[in-house]
Image (tube, rainbow, N blue to C red; front, side, top):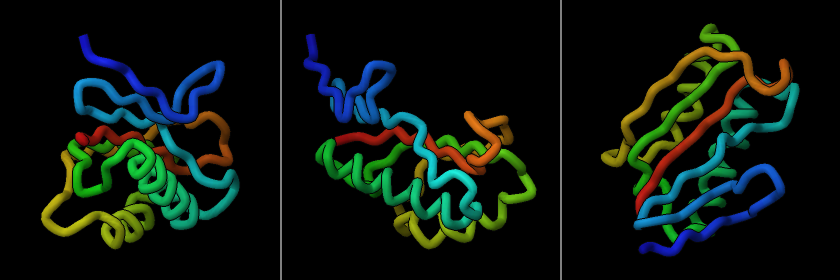
Length: 115
């Protein structure tokens, strides 16, 4: 049986969970009300930080789910993502439109990585 490690655990959820060499991150959001580009930058900084705490990095991301409050923001989000994603290490990715926790959130990113 594998150990389970939880990072930044609260009463409702953990920001990251590690088991069997896999790291699952909770959905990351940026500053409510900020632009899509600014929220995306903040989210990706959080992803980098949490992956470092888990002992891995963005070159080890195997899957990413991106939720946009409005698909009209796809290009703006991608402009930031494309500058962040490591060349040759792009994960499998899906992007969809969804109502997020509050109308002030414009982007949420969920990633899975390996150690």
